[in-house]
Amino acid sequence: LSLGDVQKGAFSVAAKTNAPVVPITLIGTGQIMPAGKEGIVNIGSVKVVIHKPIVGKDPDMLCKEARKTIASVLTQS
Image 1 (cartoon, one colour):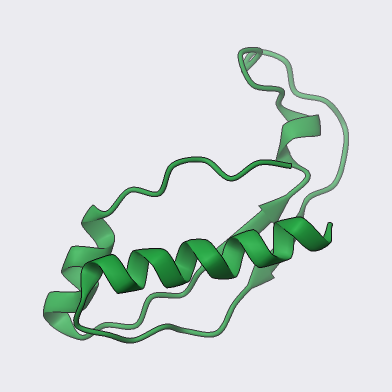
Image 2 (cartoon, one colour; image 1 turned 60 degrees about the vertical axis):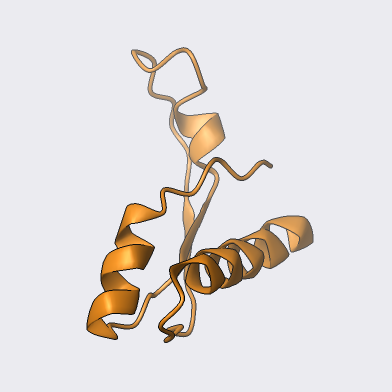
């Protein structure tokens, strides 16, 4: 299991508007649609984990917290 890059744009908007960020982890997508083989879709299941909202005014902190939250679930899988 691996965690891809996190795009920071949404965190900037959330910080400016004081909107909560809700991290979501998807587990099992790599088996269904392997990287580099997007034309192939295999049968399988995906586990969706919806985490508690994170609120803050610092986009870097929001990004780091969301990444840490998602990574903690991936290391358990």
